[in-house]
Image: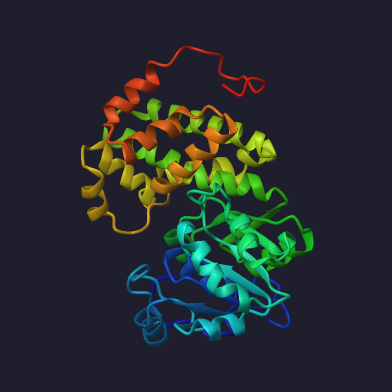
Length: 361
């Protein structure tokens, strides 16, 4: 929905059976994905309050129905209320508390928010990353900081480019939670005619795939910037998925997850779409720009840059071979050129494609 008047609260998607009474949901974080997910929740019939750190964003949404910094061309439904008062947002989140902040700030934010989390609310993470230093997934950070039961944490992950969903272009996603009833609650809360969520108990696999697809997207962007061709892009995607699977195998993930929406689906969308920040950032690097130059051109958070370090460190601790991730770290953090990185990858010793036993495929 890109024009016309903002929707009234009674205009939730007619194809979706409304949740009665409406679930009370707060979304903390008014970036592109947080704002979009707030719209989804409203369209699904929820009572939603969106928290923006900057008061001017909240005021703009309230006054104009637009988020001027992240989704300026999207008219938001009138039922999506916004505030910059975090206490108000926490008080409202009786059923679902959705966390839509960057992965590397989640710990500090959660430490501030944890005392006010409603004891009955499901905490939903939209962040895709691995915490630098600890190597923890986002659900582990949430539980570690807040002390809430792991069964109360859900993760939403999949091929979910925010702008396309905000424009109500059809897509699917995954709600991962070990508790099936809570997974289904979140599923109902975000089901619309344009977003179809599936449930999956494998929160480990969904989070790993969500974090690592950003690293793969950086590599694909570099390939594009260097004009290395579609064969190279496809090879990077396939070998990147091999790295995700190796790491996930050791951490207890279900291999099927990596063939699904949170795995292959998210990887394909992020690696090919012009809307992908990680792919776009990698393309700038592939064209010969420095990290500082690319950051000036792309000021929004590029999760793959930091996640590459966190994933590499986690892999080293577990003894998992991840050559593609290693080279992205060298490019982003150790001043290697893209040409040097790809020369190293192509010069590696030949080996079998699959070797799950040795974990070196």
